[in-house]
Length: 376
Image (cartoon, rainbow, N blue to C red; front, side, top):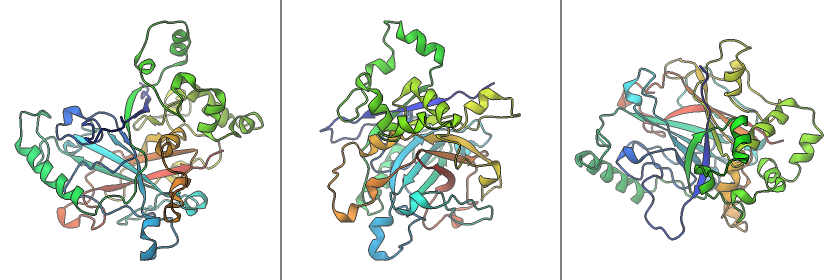
Protein backbone atom coordinates (compact mmCIF):
# COMPACT_ATOMS: atom_id res chain seq x y z
CA UNK A 1 0.00 0.00 0.00
CA UNK A 2 1.35 3.40 -0.96
CA UNK A 3 2.39 5.88 1.70
CA UNK A 4 0.06 8.90 1.33
CA UNK A 5 1.52 12.37 0.92
CA UNK A 6 0.47 15.02 3.41
CA UNK A 7 0.85 18.66 2.40
CA UNK A 8 1.68 21.47 4.81
CA UNK A 9 0.19 24.95 4.46
CA UNK A 10 1.02 28.20 6.25
CA UNK A 11 -1.71 29.87 8.30
CA UNK A 12 -0.89 33.43 9.44
CA UNK A 13 -0.73 34.24 13.13
CA UNK A 14 -3.09 37.08 13.90
CA UNK A 15 -1.38 40.40 14.59
CA UNK A 16 -1.74 41.82 18.07
CA UNK A 17 -2.09 38.44 19.75
CA UNK A 18 0.41 38.56 22.61
CA UNK A 19 -0.37 35.04 23.80
CA UNK A 20 0.98 32.31 21.49
CA UNK A 21 -1.64 29.94 20.17
CA UNK A 22 -1.68 26.57 21.96
CA UNK A 23 -1.62 25.04 18.51
CA UNK A 24 1.79 26.53 17.70
CA UNK A 25 4.37 23.90 18.52
CA UNK A 26 4.24 22.89 22.17
CA UNK A 27 2.92 26.17 23.58
CA UNK A 28 0.38 24.10 25.47
CA UNK A 29 1.45 21.22 27.76
CA UNK A 30 -1.72 19.39 26.75
CA UNK A 31 -0.65 17.37 23.74
CA UNK A 32 -4.21 16.76 22.59
CA UNK A 33 -3.91 20.33 21.27
CA UNK A 34 -0.83 19.60 19.19
CA UNK A 35 -1.26 19.17 15.48
CA UNK A 36 0.90 19.85 12.45
CA UNK A 37 3.57 22.28 13.55
CA UNK A 38 4.74 25.79 12.80
CA UNK A 39 6.96 27.85 10.56
CA UNK A 40 9.51 30.33 11.88
CA UNK A 41 9.46 31.98 15.26
CA UNK A 42 11.43 30.61 18.16
CA UNK A 43 11.66 26.81 18.49
CA UNK A 44 9.07 25.32 20.80
CA UNK A 45 11.05 22.42 22.23
CA UNK A 46 9.37 19.12 23.05
CA UNK A 47 11.77 18.44 25.91
CA UNK A 48 11.83 21.87 27.59
CA UNK A 49 14.65 20.97 29.97
CA UNK A 50 17.45 19.35 27.94
CA UNK A 51 17.41 21.88 25.12
CA UNK A 52 20.21 22.47 22.59
CA UNK A 53 22.41 25.51 22.52
CA UNK A 54 21.71 27.98 19.70
CA UNK A 55 22.24 26.00 16.52
CA UNK A 56 25.43 26.96 14.69
CA UNK A 57 25.85 26.72 10.92
CA UNK A 58 28.48 24.11 10.08
CA UNK A 59 28.89 25.56 6.58
CA UNK A 60 30.06 29.00 7.69
CA UNK A 61 33.81 29.48 7.25
CA UNK A 62 34.08 32.22 9.88
CA UNK A 63 33.72 30.68 13.33
CA UNK A 64 35.09 33.72 15.15
CA UNK A 65 33.23 34.49 18.36
CA UNK A 66 32.73 38.04 17.08
CA UNK A 67 30.66 36.59 14.25
CA UNK A 68 28.53 34.41 16.47
CA UNK A 69 25.27 36.02 15.35
CA UNK A 70 26.15 35.46 11.69
CA UNK A 71 26.57 31.70 12.12
CA UNK A 72 23.56 31.15 14.37
CA UNK A 73 20.81 29.44 12.41
CA UNK A 74 17.12 30.22 12.54
CA UNK A 75 14.19 27.86 12.78
CA UNK A 76 12.51 27.25 9.42
CA UNK A 77 9.89 24.82 10.69
CA UNK A 78 9.06 22.22 13.28
CA UNK A 79 6.73 19.24 12.94
CA UNK A 80 4.94 17.12 15.51
CA UNK A 81 5.10 13.63 13.99
CA UNK A 82 4.71 10.76 16.50
CA UNK A 83 6.32 7.45 15.58
CA UNK A 84 4.84 5.15 18.21
CA UNK A 85 4.14 2.61 15.47
CA UNK A 86 7.82 1.78 14.86
CA UNK A 87 8.26 -0.36 17.96
CA UNK A 88 9.89 2.27 20.16
CA UNK A 89 7.58 3.35 22.97
CA UNK A 90 9.86 6.32 23.61
CA UNK A 91 8.76 7.81 20.29
CA UNK A 92 5.13 8.30 21.32
CA UNK A 93 5.77 12.06 21.21
CA UNK A 94 8.19 13.09 18.48
CA UNK A 95 9.08 16.47 17.00
CA UNK A 96 11.51 17.43 14.25
CA UNK A 97 13.14 20.84 13.88
CA UNK A 98 14.74 22.27 10.71
CA UNK A 99 17.21 25.15 11.07
CA UNK A 100 18.62 27.10 8.12
CA UNK A 101 21.29 29.69 7.42
CA UNK A 102 21.55 32.15 4.54
CA UNK A 103 25.33 32.35 4.49
CA UNK A 104 27.00 32.28 1.04
CA UNK A 105 28.63 28.93 1.84
CA UNK A 106 25.20 27.33 2.20
CA UNK A 107 24.52 27.95 -1.48
CA UNK A 108 27.78 26.68 -2.89
CA UNK A 109 29.01 23.85 -0.69
CA UNK A 110 28.60 20.27 -1.77
CA UNK A 111 26.44 17.97 0.35
CA UNK A 112 28.36 15.86 2.80
CA UNK A 113 27.47 12.53 4.32
CA UNK A 114 29.29 10.90 7.19
CA UNK A 115 29.13 7.19 7.72
CA UNK A 116 31.40 7.22 10.75
CA UNK A 117 30.04 7.95 14.19
CA UNK A 118 30.43 11.52 15.37
CA UNK A 119 28.68 13.71 17.87
CA UNK A 120 27.38 16.04 15.16
CA UNK A 121 26.78 15.33 11.50
CA UNK A 122 27.29 18.02 8.89
CA UNK A 123 24.06 18.66 7.07
CA UNK A 124 24.26 20.04 3.56
CA UNK A 125 23.89 23.58 2.38
CA UNK A 126 23.42 25.40 5.67
CA UNK A 127 20.59 23.14 6.90
CA UNK A 128 20.51 21.19 10.16
CA UNK A 129 17.77 18.91 11.44
CA UNK A 130 17.13 17.89 15.06
CA UNK A 131 14.76 15.24 16.38
CA UNK A 132 13.41 14.84 19.92
CA UNK A 133 11.02 12.27 21.36
CA UNK A 134 9.42 11.25 24.63
CA UNK A 135 7.36 8.29 25.85
CA UNK A 136 3.68 8.78 26.55
CA UNK A 137 4.35 8.76 30.28
CA UNK A 138 6.98 11.41 30.92
CA UNK A 139 7.76 14.11 33.45
CA UNK A 140 6.61 17.05 31.32
CA UNK A 141 3.17 16.31 29.89
CA UNK A 142 -0.07 14.78 31.23
CA UNK A 143 -0.48 11.14 30.30
CA UNK A 144 -3.90 11.62 28.71
CA UNK A 145 -3.00 14.95 27.11
CA UNK A 146 -5.79 16.81 28.86
CA UNK A 147 -6.02 19.49 31.51
CA UNK A 148 -7.27 17.03 34.13
CA UNK A 149 -3.70 16.23 35.14
CA UNK A 150 -1.75 19.20 36.44
CA UNK A 151 1.39 17.74 38.01
CA UNK A 152 3.24 17.12 34.75
CA UNK A 153 2.17 20.43 33.26
CA UNK A 154 3.65 22.18 36.31
CA UNK A 155 7.04 20.61 35.59
CA UNK A 156 6.67 21.65 31.94
CA UNK A 157 5.91 25.25 32.93
CA UNK A 158 8.89 25.36 35.29
CA UNK A 159 11.41 24.34 32.63
CA UNK A 160 9.70 26.30 29.88
CA UNK A 161 9.79 29.52 31.92
CA UNK A 162 13.45 29.04 32.77
CA UNK A 163 14.21 28.44 29.10
CA UNK A 164 12.46 31.56 27.83
CA UNK A 165 14.01 33.71 30.54
CA UNK A 166 17.50 32.48 29.65
CA UNK A 167 19.61 33.16 26.60
CA UNK A 168 19.26 29.81 24.87
CA UNK A 169 16.90 30.97 22.15
CA UNK A 170 17.78 31.76 18.57
CA UNK A 171 18.94 35.36 18.46
CA UNK A 172 16.69 36.11 15.51
CA UNK A 173 13.60 34.51 14.05
CA UNK A 174 11.72 34.22 10.79
CA UNK A 175 8.08 35.21 10.50
CA UNK A 176 5.95 32.80 12.51
CA UNK A 177 2.88 31.01 11.22
CA UNK A 178 0.91 27.87 11.95
CA UNK A 179 1.54 24.78 9.84
CA UNK A 180 -1.59 22.79 9.02
CA UNK A 181 -1.52 19.48 7.21
CA UNK A 182 -3.95 17.75 4.88
CA UNK A 183 -3.73 14.98 2.31
CA UNK A 184 -2.50 15.81 -1.17
CA UNK A 185 -5.36 16.00 -3.69
CA UNK A 186 -5.17 13.75 -6.71
CA UNK A 187 -5.64 15.07 -10.23
CA UNK A 188 -9.15 13.62 -10.41
CA UNK A 189 -10.13 15.42 -7.22
CA UNK A 190 -8.74 18.67 -8.56
CA UNK A 191 -10.79 18.37 -11.73
CA UNK A 192 -13.97 17.69 -9.75
CA UNK A 193 -13.28 20.64 -7.46
CA UNK A 194 -13.33 22.99 -10.44
CA UNK A 195 -16.96 22.06 -11.09
CA UNK A 196 -18.02 21.73 -7.47
CA UNK A 197 -19.58 24.57 -5.53
CA UNK A 198 -18.96 22.91 -2.19
CA UNK A 199 -16.44 24.66 0.06
CA UNK A 200 -13.67 22.60 1.60
CA UNK A 201 -11.12 23.42 4.25
CA UNK A 202 -8.70 25.04 1.83
CA UNK A 203 -11.38 27.38 0.47
CA UNK A 204 -11.90 28.84 3.91
CA UNK A 205 -8.25 29.68 4.46
CA UNK A 206 -6.37 32.65 3.08
CA UNK A 207 -2.70 32.18 2.32
CA UNK A 208 -0.98 35.53 2.01
CA UNK A 209 1.68 36.36 -0.55
CA UNK A 210 2.40 40.06 -0.71
CA UNK A 211 -1.14 40.78 0.39
CA UNK A 212 -2.79 38.35 -2.04
CA UNK A 213 -5.07 35.51 -1.06
CA UNK A 214 -4.69 32.01 -2.46
CA UNK A 215 -7.59 32.62 -4.84
CA UNK A 216 -5.83 35.68 -6.27
CA UNK A 217 -2.53 33.98 -7.04
CA UNK A 218 -1.60 34.28 -10.70
CA UNK A 219 0.96 32.39 -12.75
CA UNK A 220 3.48 35.19 -12.24
CA UNK A 221 3.13 34.77 -8.47
CA UNK A 222 3.51 31.02 -8.81
CA UNK A 223 6.68 31.50 -10.85
CA UNK A 224 8.03 33.81 -8.16
CA UNK A 225 7.26 31.26 -5.46
CA UNK A 226 9.05 28.44 -7.25
CA UNK A 227 12.11 30.24 -8.54
CA UNK A 228 11.43 33.87 -9.30
CA UNK A 229 10.56 35.52 -12.58
CA UNK A 230 12.69 33.06 -14.57
CA UNK A 231 10.91 29.89 -13.44
CA UNK A 232 8.57 29.59 -16.40
CA UNK A 233 11.31 30.39 -18.89
CA UNK A 234 13.61 27.88 -17.23
CA UNK A 235 10.95 25.18 -17.46
CA UNK A 236 10.03 25.93 -21.07
CA UNK A 237 13.66 26.06 -22.19
CA UNK A 238 14.61 22.93 -20.34
CA UNK A 239 13.76 19.38 -21.35
CA UNK A 240 14.36 18.12 -17.81
CA UNK A 241 11.39 15.85 -17.15
CA UNK A 242 12.04 16.06 -13.42
CA UNK A 243 11.43 19.82 -13.48
CA UNK A 244 8.30 19.41 -15.57
CA UNK A 245 6.99 16.74 -13.18
CA UNK A 246 7.74 19.00 -10.21
CA UNK A 247 5.85 21.97 -11.63
CA UNK A 248 2.97 19.78 -12.77
CA UNK A 249 2.49 18.08 -9.44
CA UNK A 250 2.62 21.16 -7.23
CA UNK A 251 0.11 22.83 -9.55
CA UNK A 252 -2.52 20.84 -7.61
CA UNK A 253 -1.75 22.93 -4.52
CA UNK A 254 0.49 25.86 -5.40
CA UNK A 255 0.76 27.18 -1.85
CA UNK A 256 2.13 23.99 -0.27
CA UNK A 257 5.17 24.68 1.87
CA UNK A 258 5.95 21.12 2.92
CA UNK A 259 5.41 17.55 1.73
CA UNK A 260 5.32 14.73 4.27
CA UNK A 261 5.49 11.02 3.45
CA UNK A 262 7.39 9.09 6.10
CA UNK A 263 9.63 6.28 4.89
CA UNK A 264 7.76 5.24 1.72
CA UNK A 265 8.55 1.64 0.87
CA UNK A 266 9.96 1.14 -2.62
CA UNK A 267 10.55 -2.56 -3.20
CA UNK A 268 11.31 -2.31 -6.94
CA UNK A 269 11.76 0.26 -9.67
CA UNK A 270 8.26 -0.43 -10.99
CA UNK A 271 6.70 0.70 -7.71
CA UNK A 272 5.67 3.97 -9.34
CA UNK A 273 3.20 5.06 -6.69
CA UNK A 274 5.64 4.96 -3.78
CA UNK A 275 8.43 6.39 -5.93
CA UNK A 276 6.13 9.33 -6.63
CA UNK A 277 5.37 9.67 -2.93
CA UNK A 278 9.04 10.03 -2.08
CA UNK A 279 11.02 13.27 -2.53
CA UNK A 280 9.73 15.54 -5.28
CA UNK A 281 12.92 16.88 -6.84
CA UNK A 282 12.93 20.23 -8.62
CA UNK A 283 15.45 19.04 -11.21
CA UNK A 284 17.53 15.99 -12.08
CA UNK A 285 20.69 17.76 -10.92
CA UNK A 286 22.16 16.96 -7.50
CA UNK A 287 19.73 14.19 -6.63
CA UNK A 288 21.22 11.91 -3.95
CA UNK A 289 21.86 8.24 -4.47
CA UNK A 290 21.22 5.64 -1.80
CA UNK A 291 24.86 5.76 -0.73
CA UNK A 292 24.71 9.52 -0.20
CA UNK A 293 22.33 9.12 2.74
CA UNK A 294 24.26 8.11 5.88
CA UNK A 295 22.89 5.58 8.33
CA UNK A 296 21.98 6.64 11.86
CA UNK A 297 25.20 7.34 13.78
CA UNK A 298 23.65 6.09 17.03
CA UNK A 299 22.00 2.77 16.11
CA UNK A 300 23.15 2.09 12.55
CA UNK A 301 19.60 1.90 11.17
CA UNK A 302 18.87 3.05 7.65
CA UNK A 303 17.75 6.61 7.20
CA UNK A 304 14.85 7.18 4.81
CA UNK A 305 13.00 10.16 3.44
CA UNK A 306 10.37 11.63 5.77
CA UNK A 307 9.51 15.11 4.48
CA UNK A 308 10.73 18.00 2.36
CA UNK A 309 10.67 21.79 2.50
CA UNK A 310 9.25 23.41 -0.61
CA UNK A 311 10.54 26.68 -2.12
CA UNK A 312 7.19 28.31 -1.34
CA UNK A 313 8.09 28.19 2.36
CA UNK A 314 10.74 30.88 1.90
CA UNK A 315 8.13 33.53 1.07
CA UNK A 316 6.20 32.84 4.26
CA UNK A 317 9.35 32.87 6.36
CA UNK A 318 10.48 36.21 4.92
CA UNK A 319 7.06 37.67 4.17
CA UNK A 320 7.03 40.45 6.75
CA UNK A 321 10.73 41.00 7.30
CA UNK A 322 12.31 44.40 6.88
CA UNK A 323 14.34 44.21 3.68
CA UNK A 324 16.51 47.11 4.92
CA UNK A 325 17.79 45.20 7.94
CA UNK A 326 21.04 46.18 9.61
CA UNK A 327 24.27 44.87 8.17
CA UNK A 328 24.68 42.51 11.10
CA UNK A 329 21.58 40.71 9.90
CA UNK A 330 22.74 40.57 6.31
CA UNK A 331 22.75 37.04 4.92
CA UNK A 332 19.89 35.68 7.01
CA UNK A 333 17.38 36.88 4.42
CA UNK A 334 19.27 35.16 1.62
CA UNK A 335 18.00 31.65 2.30
CA UNK A 336 17.28 29.82 -0.92
CA UNK A 337 16.61 26.27 -2.02
CA UNK A 338 14.87 24.25 -4.70
CA UNK A 339 13.89 21.77 -2.04
CA UNK A 340 15.29 20.38 1.21
CA UNK A 341 14.70 16.65 1.76
CA UNK A 342 14.93 15.35 5.32
CA UNK A 343 15.98 11.77 6.07
CA UNK A 344 15.45 10.25 9.51
CA UNK A 345 16.35 7.11 11.43
CA UNK A 346 13.83 4.39 10.57
CA UNK A 347 14.11 2.98 14.09
CA UNK A 348 13.47 6.43 15.56
CA UNK A 349 16.13 5.53 18.09
CA UNK A 350 16.71 7.40 21.34
CA UNK A 351 20.17 8.61 20.35
CA UNK A 352 22.77 8.62 23.17
CA UNK A 353 22.29 5.59 25.39
CA UNK A 354 22.36 7.40 28.70
CA UNK A 355 21.92 10.85 30.20
CA UNK A 356 25.69 10.91 30.77
CA UNK A 357 26.14 10.85 27.01
CA UNK A 358 23.82 13.74 26.25
CA UNK A 359 25.44 16.13 23.85
CA UNK A 360 26.71 19.24 25.59
CA UNK A 361 25.49 21.26 22.61
CA UNK A 362 22.35 19.40 21.49
CA UNK A 363 20.95 18.26 24.84
CA UNK A 364 18.45 15.43 24.36
CA UNK A 365 18.09 16.26 20.66
CA UNK A 366 19.43 13.94 17.94
CA UNK A 367 20.77 15.23 14.64
CA UNK A 368 19.31 13.83 11.41
CA UNK A 369 20.31 14.35 7.77
CA UNK A 370 19.12 16.86 5.17
CA UNK A 371 19.85 17.15 1.48
CA UNK A 372 19.52 20.61 -0.03
CA UNK A 373 18.86 20.75 -3.76
CA UNK A 374 19.56 24.21 -5.23
CA UNK A 375 16.86 26.17 -7.09
CA UNK A 376 16.53 26.08 -10.87
